[in-house]
Length: 296
Image (cartoon, rainbow, N blue to C red; front, side):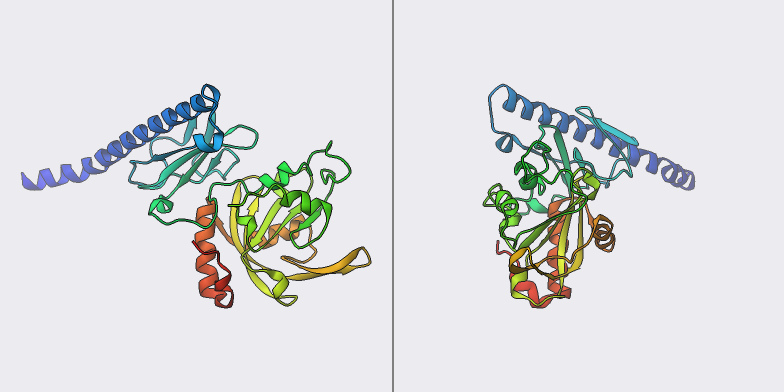
């Protein structure tokens, strides 16, 4: 009898565990949908600023990713297990993690699934929820009707933070004080129209203080919502059209070249994860630059 019971338990236990996990996921989805509705009510009915109306929902599920269905739909946004990140859906649910609900610049909803580590009392030195493409978009430089400075028709634009140009100054005016881009060195690079070929490169290193062809760690954000941590090589910009030579985060490349650097890096689901990977990388592999990390 004991042997028979043991066999039955062995057979039924996985099914029961799956059932319990599916129940947890159903609860999480219901909570996220409720929080989304509350956020939109605050924005549309009460006039609350979208930044202040953001919601964070703690997850009850105990297994990473979805077990109950292949495709999940919330507020008209669908995402299938195994799909890449999009502008509306970033990451996967984690055991004990969170779902952060916010609005993109175009007022579409964005669900960001994190592992919950950002809620351990640590204060980050900048806004982990910012849209890193926001300053470029808000500058109007990608708008075909944005005047003579727009780069919407460019096959390969290069907008380096150390360049003293009207385009770069316009971007800097749109960077918030708590932004990652207020520290270190950055560059917006890529194609004027194709979001899969638009990149932000960032490093905590002030490249104006290092030599040309110095290898540095970088966080890369692609405009279609993907994060990576990789490495780049500094370069010097000089020539007849440049009054004052300056150092950059990367050499003259094209979108395929930016993607090559990206492909060599570590893929991350969020800015929080990318920054944590970056900190580990700079501490272990680039210890001469660890003092460039922003302080909490």
